[in-house]
Length: 187
Image (tube, rainbow, N blue to C red):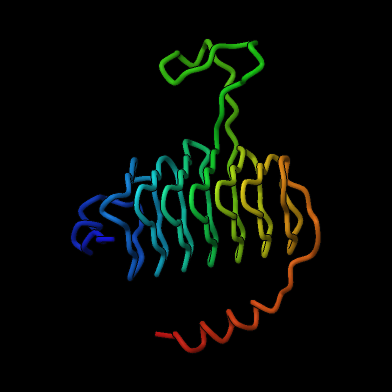
């Protein structure tokens, strides 16, 4: 995997780009003027990042993910990870048949859903999962592979399934490790 140079990243015109950010030269970045990326975050091969997107520090978007921020936006706070093939949408068409769909159709014929998505600190989303508009995944949640997250979660839970449901609490041991990591990696 080859990463874009610091100069290439700066030339793209991001709203904000932190230090030691790594973005694959095989990632597709649309609307960089609306995208903020925090220190030490990484975006891997074959990802598509578009619209209003904000990544905190130490966020990792692994290969083949889609983060479609659109106008409402998608925010990942510090230490979030999207595993392979995760899709995050902040807007969606109305599939009921009451309106037209398709990005080629003018808005007056559509009934699109627009709502911000937020992943709070220390969230991990498993491979192949999908997150719908308006969802907030609360701090410390773990989303199992292939989950469909169509409702917001409660903090520190493990969620699985379609639709995603909480199956048990997630341990908070990682908070001590986070504190130790940040202490050791102070600059």
